[in-house]
Each structure stands twice: as structure tokens, then as C-alpha cells.
Image (cartoon, rainbow, N blue to C red):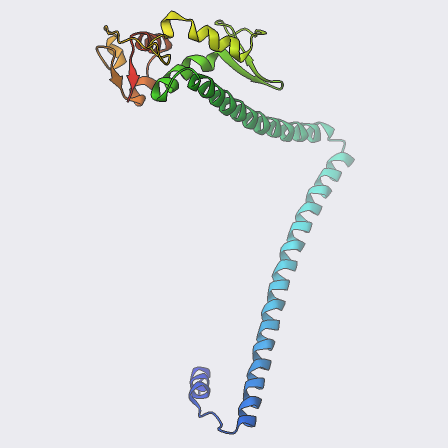
Length: 218
């Protein structure tokens, strides 16, 4: 008789009617289950030990290789390896810092623009505010029109935009309705509504012309 046949026969066998016999049968099954669980845990522990041993062996081999290089006086190769690891780490840190600075600067520009304008006009205005901001270890700093650091505050920059004639069409409560032709590469023939995707392809000069003429983003 095969194992499958035995298991099926045991599964379908008639249970005893005597409660004491039934209790014994249940206790026997529980012992078998506990034994199986113990065996399963043993296998898991063996797997963990094997993995830990492999990691320890890998680390030990790396240490041995480094020690061999030292013994051979191959310090140049050791220094090169350490320098490469340092460069990779520095690049990873710089990338993370640049991403953080970009996000903070973009959010600050949008926050400042939202104090002067609404909706898509605020987003449009933020594209002109953002180049005037720079994130540093001391926080957000204001730049002049040429990208040089200044001592101006965010309120100073806000007042500058509020009083700039070329941004009047975007400022809350003073929007112009103007019109006029834009360059053919701008994707539209007059100031009006355009898609964000089109606006993103324009040069700073085209964006400025569009803003001055009262254009809005869809």
C-alpha cells in the first residue's frame, strides 16, 4: 500500500465512539503535529545559520584579501579602492541633497507665488520666482536677477514681483486682459489658454511674453 493510500485510509477511518479513546487519538495527533512543527523550525534555524555563515565567510574573505594586499605593500590599490567607495558615497549624498534642495526651492516658490496669485496663475508665477531662490544650509536665500546672492528677504522679493509691471497680469486683483502674438514655436498665436505640456517646452523669454500678455494655463 502506498503512503497516499495509507493517508487516505487514516483520514477516512471510523472514529471511536468511546470518548476516552477519542481523546487519546486527538492527543496522538497533537504530538505528531508538534513533532512536525519542531522539525520545521529546525529546518528554518538551519537555513538562518547557513545564511549567517555564508555572510561571515564573505566578510572574512574580504578582510583576508585586504590583509594580503597590505602584506604585499599594495597600498596604492587599497587607497584606490577606498577612494572609489568614498566617491560613490559622496555622489549618492550629493544627489540626495540636490533633490532635497530642488523640492524645497520649488515648494517655497509656489508658496510665495500663492500669496500673490491664484490657481494656475500662481503656478505660472512660481516659474519666475523659483530662479530667484536658492536653498542653502542656512535655509532659503534670495538671488538677484543675475543669480547672485543678496541680503533681501522673501518679503522683499514678494514686493518686487508685486510692483513689477511685467507680472501685473498674474497678480491677484490686477490682471490684464491683453493679447498679442507669440513666437510660432510657442504653440499658440495669441495669449490665452495653453496646455501645461506646451508651456514647459517654451524658453524663459516665451514664458515671460505669455505672462505679460495675460496668458493662462489650462
